[in-house]
Length: 394
Image (tube, rainbow, N blue to C red; front, side, top):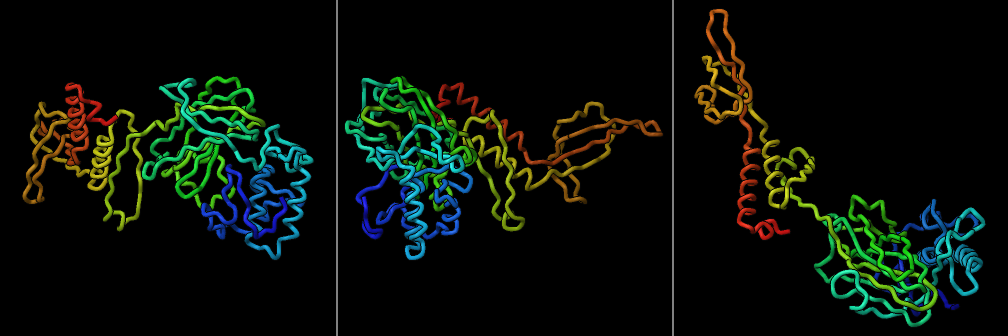
């Protein structure tokens, strides 16, 4: 469709890129550098997805839109050359292949096709085809198209924190009309996008998929070229499934959930941070089974490091009954000491005159172990009463 650049397009591709004129989804395109965009254009007038990546037609098209939006006066010639090259790559049916090699005579990467199709179809609950529970989510396309798209949007305040729930699991099933190529896409509350691409058999059987998400696994995802800020893994707002084919048919999604939640607890001393700066210590303890237990361990560790142990070494009349681990009250007005100390070590000696002496090493430390043991006993009492799940919350 030939249109003047300043005219509004009648629609847009509901896929990876949401950068298009006259929409409200991503209006702050000024943060995309012109120099960076032009580095993506090779001397052969093709656009790659990143400086060392493949040719991806639908991302390249939006890159040209961004380039013209930012410098319509000076970049017309370059934009025309790129668009002419995209026409050369276009198939006779109006589509493009998903990816092309940038240095191999622009050969296609695989047989998967994309175009600016409408992703028509309808979404419904299906009790006949389900992996678990009573229903699955069914997407049906009755008008010939190039892909079907099912979008799951979470309500405000219910966004997923993938740092807390880092595992995404779901099952997908396709009819034989699909190609088996699936794109699963996450979108955060600011519209930034990451995606995974995978293949399944189009044999109308359920295929289980699990992907690790969150900040620690961010490099395992493909980040959209047009993200204007880092993806926010703490506020995942949308999940989209794109199943590719050329025709009509249905696909299903079921058993979708985020899991592998980690219990956690944090303790901090803001006054110490202001004096000495922020230093973090991560403790991993697989025996802790609640956020409350983790918080108590963190608090005990903070107290231990904030007020380090105080040692005393004293010599007393020999007593073979003194054993390490005992608690001894030490009172010394001259040293301003009046506290309980734990006996860390004891050595018994006979001096040159035959007198029996005990050399004691005492330590005064925060009752970290005692705190943990006390809380563990409390948890065990709850288990004995049969109310562990209410207490632990999971």
